[in-house]
Length: 434
Image (cartoon, rainbow, N blue to C red; front, side):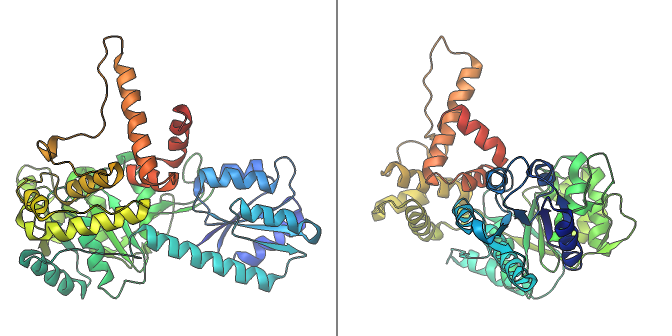
């Protein structure tokens, strides 16, 4: 259910809006920007905010939202006399504005438009728009053929492949060839979620479930309703959490933390790992019953060294994509360069090739000297006066500078690629004057 935050200091209007919207949305409210800021930890989808508020104004609140919840869409409520200010609010990032007294039919239209915009952004984020899968080698085409067959049913699929070989890309391919393609694709890194937060992130929680749970929150399973859930690196999941995944896959049932009712998940599960799960079962690190549940349909994704005929196509694709994204002139590749690329071991697989091509585009030259897998484009000067902390900060600054240039200053895209909290990124950029 879409989460709507109402920020309005007039009690009668705020209560009317809560009653009007509660049938379609999960609604929570605040009387000021300061109080509303506390609700941002729950990532509201849409914020309906009055322009004039006690304390910080609606304009001030837009800046706060764009920093802490950049994916939220803001609809400004304003009196007719303040419409020029409302237009200014849209320049600052508001989705739209609605004049007072409110036309509820118009409000419904704006909310629906905001929902569609949010859904489209999420599809783009998940790779469902502008999606490409590149490869013409015999072994890769065979893999895609099997993937298309698996896409036609709802049984769990286990993708086996080395790190960087493109397991998530293949999972998206299965999703987009299924009857769930118009729904969400939600990727979950099984090793990245701390054990203490796993249940709340996956299943969500109810209001009052624990200290600080002032509102309910949907989990990733609920967000993916009707779509596909991709558990990456399932082999890294701690044993204590594997039982929860087993129950979810077997029954489709789950509970929000603090909730009384069992919810039924209508999702398709795809799993991936670079580990030998059969060996992990023998060693007692992976549940045998879970292994049999997730591995009914296996799909082996070949490493890049076993599909070297795809390297020219992949290089061409990454050159075109990276060059277009960065408004840079496309580099010309000679046949001998492509043949040379085929001779490398590619321990990092397709991800390593992608990183190399991005480096070429950004620096405007093709570098193949030495072992590609060992080459590093971030250089740090060694000086006796430097401390360990100085080296770390210099490396971090160089890394941020590189990716900031790559994304043409798009901080949200930078945070996504580095897997960094957006607010943390802003703090670091400020620290280094970037």
